[in-house]
Length: 295
Image 1 (cartoon, rainbow, N blue to C red):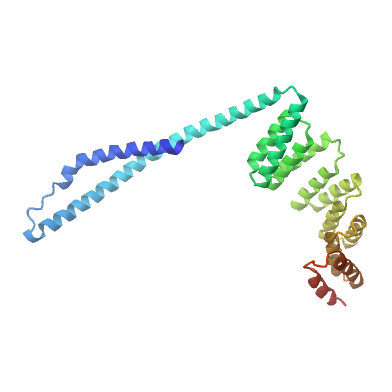
Image 2 (cartoon, helix red, strand yellow):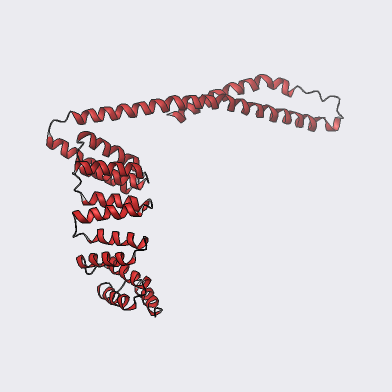
């Protein structure tokens, strides 16, 4: 709509300026060339008219820009404000309609649909639409843990870590600080921001609430490795392997850690296990070469 109005303004401006040009045209063509030699009269007259016309058109386009640009900006600002206002009204109406839902089943189904759609937008990296839907879901049920969890993920993807952390911390209040996955997400955020000690603390909390999840042990082991606490990293990863004996990621980590610690025997032990559970693993040749270089 804005582009159409801007184009209309430009067309009207152009029409007016063409009218001015037509009025000037007799003066443009009324050039005194009678004093020129006969053989040059026609050619020079044409050149003079051409030069005058070029200057006139240049002046016209400058005037078009002067007239059209402020008008375009004015219309753009006007309709941008109206558009934002309409969006705000639309959100208010949508949320009011949600508030008017009396059936618990209807509310639950509406929230479920919004979360499914928000996940789709998240996968498509349309974070704004995902956020809007999740905020709508929360407006229906301010205690919906799934909506908060997904909203925190949206913020993480946008690297809005402060908002993500605040959302997760509020989620902890809803779950009475008993959600291992929330502490794991907080740890992930702390790790991404370079706060490894905070990440360690949060991963330990997640493990205390769910000590049978090998992913938490592997994540904590990776933090210990970054902190250069190799013994803790080894012990933690081994606990994770106990929970998931054939996990290629944990075996990969343990082989790499064993090589860093120059423990050739341990590295070979885990390499043999990796060959057994994942013989097509692309890193086997690289690991073999690195282990052979150990004394």
